[in-house]
Amino acid sequence: MTQQEQTISEVLARLLGRDPIQMTPSTSLQDQLGIDSTEMVDIVCALEQVFKIKLPDEAERSAKTIADLGRIVTAHQVQSAA
Amino acid sequence: MSRHIVVTGIGLITPLGIGTQATWDGVLAGRSAIRPIRKFDAVAYPGCFAGELDGFNAEDHMPIRLARKLDPYTQYAVAACDLALRDGRLDPAQTQQSRFGVYVGNCFGGWAYTDQQLRNLHTQGTRAVSSFQATAWFPAAPQGQISILFGLRGNSKTIICDRASGLASIGYAARAIAAGDCDIMLAGGTEAPVTPFAYLACLTENVVATGGRPEHAYLPFDAKCKGLVPAEGAAFVLLEEREHALRRGVEVYAELQGFALTSDSCHPATLPARERYLSLSMRKALADAALTSEDISLILADGAGTPEGDAQEAQAIRSVFGEATQSTPVAAPKSLLGHMYGAAGALDVALGALALKHGVVPPTARDDKPEPACELLLSTQAARPRALKHVLLNSRGAGGVNAALVMSK
Image (cartoon, rainbow over all chains, first blue to last red):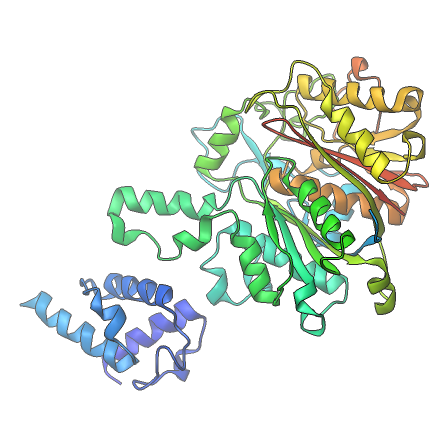
C-alpha cells in the first residue's frame, strides 16, 4: 500500500466507522464499502483537506477503488508541486 | 375513536436524562435541568437558559456512519424510537411493515447542522458545505431516517404546528390506527433548538424567559412567570391497536381516547385577544373520548409560562371544568426541563402515561405562589400520589393552533 492509499484508508475508516485494517488498494468503494454518491462528495472534500490539494469533480465519478483514489490524489499532488 | 389505541412503549431523550427511567426519576424528584447555555458561546445571549442533553451518545443507537450525517434532532428522534421499541419489546422486522408507520412532530428542522454549515459557507466558500446538508436539515428528515432504519413502510408523516407538533403527531397517528390504516405507530416529537440561530429565533417570539436563577426561569401559572425556556430532546411512544398489543402480551401504559385540534385564526406570533378555541379543543377531545370534564383526574397543561398564555389557558380550563376546576390538579412538568417545542406535547403524553401507570401527579416548577387570578389547583414542586383514571393534555402553537388529547388508564 502506498502512503497515499494508507492515508486514504484511514480517512475512509474514520468517515465510515470501519476498521482501516479491512481495506486494501483493491477494495471497491461502492460494492464493498457501500459508498453512495453523497458520501463520495464528502470523502473527496475530506481528502482535499487532508492532502491540501484540489480534486476535480470527475474524481467522485471515476474512482472505483482505493487504488483509484490513490492515483488521483498522487497525480494532483504532483500538479500542485509543479 | 373507533378502534382502541394503546401506548405500549416509551422512549425519552431529555435534559433530565437519557432514557425514560432517568427522565421520570428526575420528574419525580422535582429536579430542574435548566441551566445557562453551554452548547454554544452564549456571551451575546446574556441571561439565557436552556434545557440541554447531558451524556447523549448517538453511537449507542445507530452506526457512526449514519450519525455523522444527521442533525442532532434526527439523532435524538432515532434514539428515542429505538428506546420505545425496546421498551415495547417490538422488533419491526417481525411485523407487517406496511401496517407500521411513524409520525414525527417538529418545529425547526436541523439548525444545529445548518448553523455550522452556513458559517462554513460564508467563511470558506461553497466547497466547505457538507454534502449531507440537504438531507440533514429538512423537517421530514427524522421521519425518513426512522422509517429507513426500522423498515417502516406504513402511513407516515411529519407534523408541523409549532409547539403543538408533538401532541398533534400522536393524535394523528392514533387516528390513523383507529381508521384501520395501520396497526402500529411510532409517534412523537423531536427538537434541537439550542443553536446560535435557532435560539435567536425563539427569542424573537417574545415568549422566552431570561435572567434570574435558571431553575426559576420557567414557571407556568406562577405569580412570577415570565416565559418559557427552550430545550432539546425527543419523546416517542409506541402506539398499537389494542388487540394487536394484547396478542403480543405486552404491557399497556395507557389508552388514547380522544383528540381534537382547533385554530384561533388570529396572528402568526401572538395569542388571540381572548380565549375561545383552546376550550373548544378541550371540549372536542372530551367528546371524542365520550367523557366529560368530571371524569378527568389530571390536566397536563400547555404551560406557556407567559402571563397572557397562562391566563388564557386558565380561563379555558375554568370554562370547561367549572366548579371541578378547584378539584382537578393541573401540572406542567415540562417546566422542570424546558420547553422542547415540537417534542413538548409528545413528552407530555409520555409523562401522562407514566403518571397513570404510577398514580402520581407530576410536579410543576415553582418559585412563588400560583398566580391567584388563574384559580387553578396547580401541582407543587413535589410529586404527589393520586389515583388517576383519565388525563387531559393541552398544547398550543404559534399561529393559533390548539391541540387537546385525552388518555386513560
